[in-house]
Length: 394
Image (cartoon, rainbow, N blue to C red; front, side, top):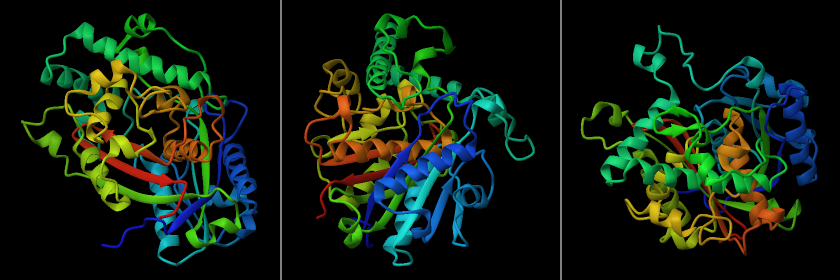
C-alpha cells in the first residue's frame, strides 16, 4: 500500500484565540483563521483550488465555508467525524493533493458552541436514531468509567489515581498559561485539581476539558512545491484514521483501560512514517485530552509508556515541557479548549509552530517529528486520527 509520506506539505496555518468568543460570529472566526493561513503561506483565497470544511454543529454543506471566504466556484467538501473532525478535514485535503487532483488546497475547522448553550453534558442526538443509553450517558460518565477501569486493572487506589490525573491537569494548565491563544490561561495547583468539584466520579472539574468557540486552518500543497512558498514548510509523514466495530461496547472482557482504535491507529501511522521507536523518535505530541484519564491511557496506546507504567512517567515529568517527550505543549483540549470541528487543526497548528521553532516561551528543544492524536467517541467505540509531521523531507 502506497503511503502519503513526504508527498504533501503544509505551508501556512492560522488559528484564532479559543474561548467564549461572544464578539465573533462563526464567519468571523473562519475568516480570521483562514486569512492568517493565507498570509502565512503568501497566497490569497483566489489561489485555493479546493477546500475541506470540518464542523459538527455549524452547518451541513461546504457553503458555510465558501461564503465568508468568497471561494469562487471551487469544490468545497463538508466532513464530520465527531471530535476527530478537524483531523478528518486535514486527511482528506492531504490525500486529494497526494492523488494529484489539486496543487494548493485549504482545510478549515470551526465551531461556535458557547452561543448555543451546549455544555458537553447532555446528549442531544434524537432518540429515533440513537439508543436510550446513548441519549442518557454523558461523555464525562463514559470516561469516568475508563478511569475506574484503569485504576482497577493496575491496582491504583483512589487517592493515588486522583493525584496522577491532577498532575496531567496541572501540566496542561501550565502550558496553556504560556499560550495567548488558549481559552484558559492560568496555572492551578495539584491540590486544586484533586479537590475540585466532582463532575462524574472520579473525574473532577479540572479533569474535564472546556467547551469553546474557535477556528483553525491549514494551506496544503504538493511537497515538491513547498519551498516556493516558504523556507520552513512542514511535511506530512502519515495521516491515518481508525474506527472499530464498537467491540468495547459488545465485549464483556473489554478492560476500559485503553482505546483499541488509538493503539491500532498509532501503529498504522508509525508504519507509514517509518517510525520504529515512538518514544524516542517523536519530539512533541498533541493528544486528545478531553479528560485527564484519556491523556494517561493515550500515552500507553501510542507506545510512549509501557502498559500500566504511564503513571510513573507522569510522576517523572516525562511529558512536561522540559521532559523527554513534551505532550500538549499548547495546553491541550484541557486549556486551549475544544470547539469540536477545530480541535484537530489546532493540534496541527501547535506542531507546525513547534517544528518551525516559533512557539515562543513553550518552544521545545530541537524538534524533528510531531504527532497529533484526535479522538471522537468514547472508550470502546472511538474514531481516532493520528497525523505525523516533520520539518525535513525524507
